[in-house]
Each structure stands twice: as C-alpha cells, then as structure tokens.
Length: 178
Image (tube, rainbow, N blue to C red; front, side):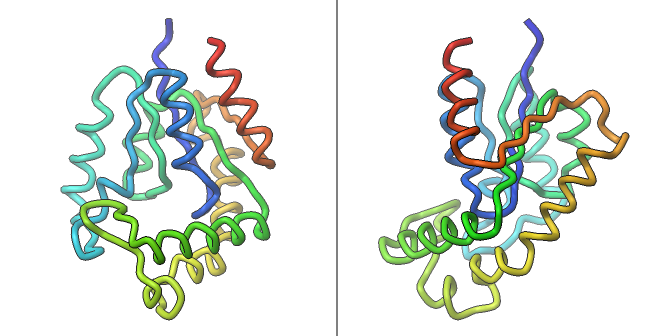
C-alpha cells in the first residue's frame, strides 16, 4: 500500500485541526499540527531553523497528516505529500467559526500550544486578534491556494477540495471504511 502523506490546508478557522484529528483517527496516521511546532511559550514564534527541524523530525515517518499553511516549510512538506485536503469555505462561515471558537477559548482560557492561551484582550482588542487575521487574510489565502492547485509546481499531489462542511464530513466517514 502506498504511504499516505496528507496536508490539510485552508484559511484560518475553517476547522482544519478538527478535520485532521478525525481523519487521523480513521486512518491511524500520526497527526502533526504546525502551530504546535511553531509557537513557543508567550506566543513567541520559533526561529526558522528550529521550526524547520521540528517539522522534518515530525514528518520523518512514511505516513502522516500535517495541519497548517506555513509557507516557510512548504517546500519540505509539499514535495513529499501525496494528498492535499483543502477546506475552502466562504468568508461568512469561516468568520462565524472564528468568532465562536475564539470566544470559547478566551472565556475558558483553553491552553493551545506550549502554554499559550487566547485572552479577551488579545482576541478582540489587539492587532494580533485571530478575528482580525481572518478578516484581512481570508481572500488572499484562498487565492493563494487556488494558484498552488493550478500551478505545475506539485503535479504529483492529489487535491480534494471541500466547499462545504458536509463534504469534509463525508470524506471523513469514507476514510473510516478503508
């Protein structure tokens, strides 16, 4: 059987991590969350070399599922991947998910990666707000992924695009049958 190396991409707050966790359970593939490798305590980014090394070590096995869109490690991941699962949802749904998720995380002080937590101030009243990030990057990221899909840079990749959550859920159910 051919090794599966799956990338899960999409704009922020589309549900990439939730999708990838369910897919990892069904496929028994190890899950790698790029955010967990990138963010140091205190919301400090890892330096480029450290981040790259973490990514390479975490994806050294034959099969994996990687969640995230970091351009700085795209070459290391996309050249070895077999499949791209693209959660390509519209702005209204994505922003609603961002608002709901961010509010919950800020209120319950949910720990994310390396002790980092979203706060009310950071989430709603700062330039570092994930909500602001969704507003300012959603369109650009969708266009970037469409260009990558259309480019000849990664002809070996099989693309699966989901434009509605129901499509992604059906894919997860189908993966349980394999």
